[in-house]
Image (cartoon, rainbow, N blue to C red; front, top):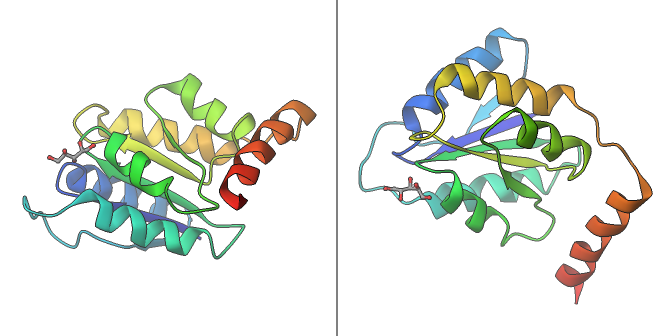
Length: 147
Ligand code: RB5
């Protein structure tokens, strides 16, 4: 399951990406915003999505705000979330093969729809490397969360 959510800074991009993913055969759950609301707050969507993603090891999440940065900050407050900002092909690939990110964050005011579709596909199509050094580094983050 792929969860997707956005505030007003990411709403138009969310709509485009959601349709792209559904057409591509992915199971997508849209956690809002349901409409463009200039007064909405990105942490509300970040926490809602993060709480879903941590319940299912197979799940992934896509969070979109104006820059992706606020979503990333908020989502990473939820234990078990590995959220990263993706803004080019390299960060999209690294998100998966080095970081095993279960959430990627995009900037609706930074990344256009064609770029975003490409980045999401790279992230989805790339496996975590399982290299010992990456497992070790991620374990250190988990230990911090557990302490
Ligand atoms: C909202 O105006 C904007 O601050 C938000 O979408 C995002 O860019 C935060 O990182």
